[in-house]
Length: 108
Image (cartoon, rainbow, N blue to C red; front, top):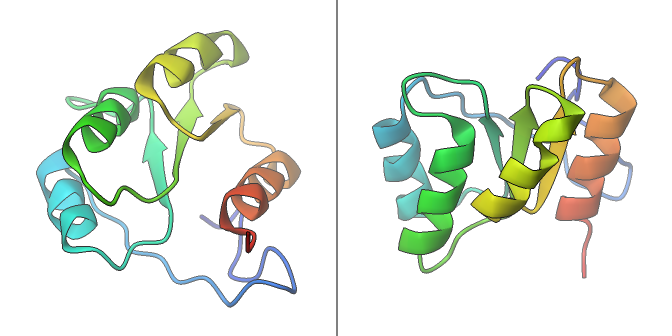
């Protein structure tokens, strides 16, 4: 998350991160609430962020916005299938990541 930093926009509060290594732990934290944005690694194994994004949408009553990091821009259709709110392809462009996060966290 070094590409994003803790203050991607002056109108947003300072960001804090909770990093987890497995899908079950991610589900546990997201189900408990208090998470404002989930950033998932679409290339993770054994449970990829794309499948996890779909599972979150299917199973959680209060799912936060979901951003997936995808292997390449052509994988955008997979992000659409997963019902992620946004995607950013590798290699990660910090400005593109910042813009995606700001768009998802901006006050309505």
